[in-house]
Image 1 (cartoon, rainbow, N blue to C red):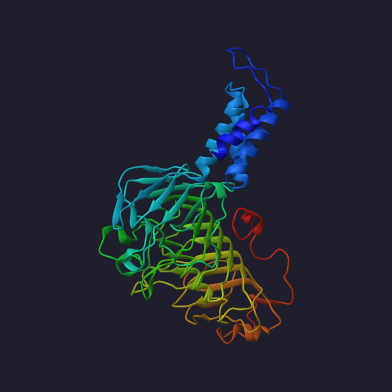
Image 2: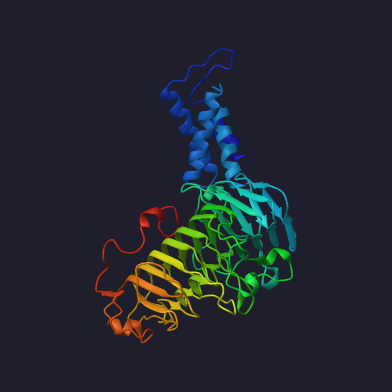
Length: 462
């Protein structure tokens, strides 16, 4: 009864005629009504900016619609607060495989609870409205919950800086009233559900140019990726936060935060936050999709993992290590047995944050298995003394460069902020004593690494 009593108590604050005549509300009266409505909402629901804004909008709309009494405005504000605090939950899937075979929309007035493998099949588009919260049911191993966009399917998940789309686990208590901050989760929570997987028809450095995506039990047509079109379009993801992922099917067969296999450059991946993966933050197998404005934080294995002749560009990224992280980057070349399928990636404008309590020290990056691509403007800060490269494959190492070179991995403008000597940082991983592409700096230089101003919407830069 608290809501009704509170509304009744305020109803005497201002008197308005209930007769069928025009009611004139000046700015001061309108503000008084809105203030009363917001106060009522905040007294009964979470005291957040989201509740205040919704209550104010509802009260203002009530007055604009000709409701001149304060009780109506307050009730509408309470209804708006209730919708944000206790939205309906829609379960998608029953724990096995659920196929989306026609265009489908998940709206931002409900919580969408995925259970099992949710597969967007060829010819279908899954649209997720801005600000929508999507949760993954708890499941381990082969039963992990995963959203899979299969070859020929599309995702249209377009959030905004103010209303990002959030993927998280089922036991995360976040609702729309909380905004983008969970009341019970932290960045250290990992492996609580599966991940988001996008598959396409891009060129993949694997036998026969096709493979089954890791982290999902194979044997289905929708687990396959790879084809002949690096311009393939799997849809759009903008302003999306994916949290607490990475359940493994089996050792060496893991899920990440975001996994893409054979995804083409027609796909738009921009402003993505990946927090708390039990394996990699992002892993890309082949294809040529471009990723812009990326934050990867608190992962257990590698921040950015590139495989199978990935030929796209990752630009403006921040990688933040956790205590148990392996490397900032793990980059492999083609796995096609005759080296007939190759591709050169570009990784540019990246800031990597280390930490003093990391367990491993060879964390700066591992360019292995005939990695080929170009690494430009990469800044390492907050790494403890003794941090080194993990490896650079001598077969493809091309030293300093200015662009991608077929069959080579090249570097330019890599800066490590440390008191260690360059030779100690390189740790014998390249047979290049000068390594002009690597600079040691005693303090953080300006103008290097990522432009972090675009990340204000994320949890780490909020």
